[in-house]
Amino acid sequence: MRTVRWILTCAAAAVVAGCNAPSVSKRPPLPVQVTTAEVTDYAPTLSLTGEIAARVSSNLSFRISGRVVERKAEVGQHVALGDVLARLDPAEAEADLDAANAAVASAEAVLKQNTASFARQKQLFDSGFTTRSGFDAAQQNLRTAENALDSAKAQAATAADALTYSVLKADKAGVVTARGIEVGQIAQVAQTAYAVAEDGPRDAVFNVFESVFFAHPARVGVRLSLVADPSVQAIGHVREISPTVNTRAGTVTVKVAVDDPRNRMPLGAPVIGQAAFAARKVVELPWTAAASDAGQLAVWIYDPATGAVALKPVVAEAFDNERLVVAEGLNGGERVITAGAKFLFPGEVVAPQEANP
Image (cartoon, rainbow, N blue to C red; front, top):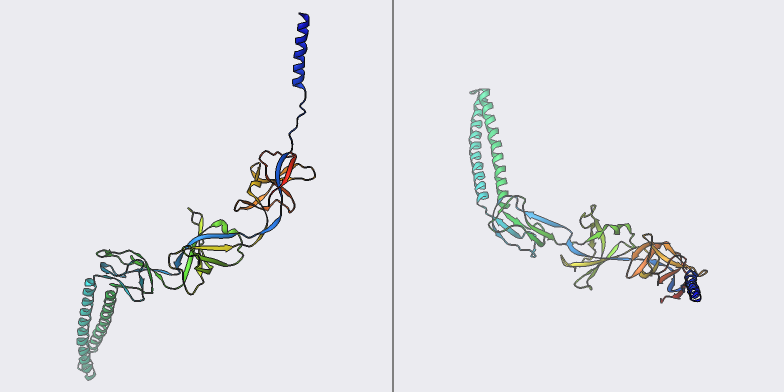
């Protein structure tokens, strides 16, 4: 019995000793892919979709109020200078003109009467058969009649102009882009009846994100091409930049003048605008090289002397086509891990393999 107890005690001691013994196993070097950082020129190209618009667009309206009796232009129709677009009922304007003409006739009769009276008073005054006050009164009545006639004629001219205002005509050749009246509607003064995009220069209008303006363009020109037919191309230049930012979209309206006298881009057509920016020195890496160091962008650097790795913070210029474009933090010739970095920790020794170019 004592022998059995001694054997069990020795066995238990051996088990405990085995558990407390230090481990001699060690993690083998983790295979990773590395690439050599090379400083290159990076010249990104901005490509946006916009719309062809007229350089000048006019809102046409009647200068008097009235009921619309005719409209002759439709949206999309091309109109020439002087073409009739719409008409108002001229009855009220004609009545006003008739009243003004009658006032002119009455003023002319009064003037004729006062002219004759003044002539008689002047003859009597020269002969000494009337008083100075009678002559002055006749002269004053004559001047009043003359002024009344001038006023009546001015009102008649205004009434005649108002009658012409009942017809709305195109003041420039162009394309009708909007219509705001219908037959039978009472149109008010200055109410927009038609919007006309005038013939002539065209602009390509883009909504550009505000961050784009922090970059420096390589050239002023913008290459334009139609979405429907990319073979139709033109070169434009930035003509106008809106001073305000759209608070909802965070964009700025930019108008690019189309430098094409043939004007082959139709109004309202969608276009693609491309602009190149000035080249900058960067390091381009596969996107798999991106890592995080306390929430900041970093990459793993391999040290050939020790075979160990370390995190290095970097500043990204852009993430472009599955590439990480590094603007700051890397030098040419440094060895960067591009694959196999998910299980690394600082100071770990790795087995590097050259990444495919």
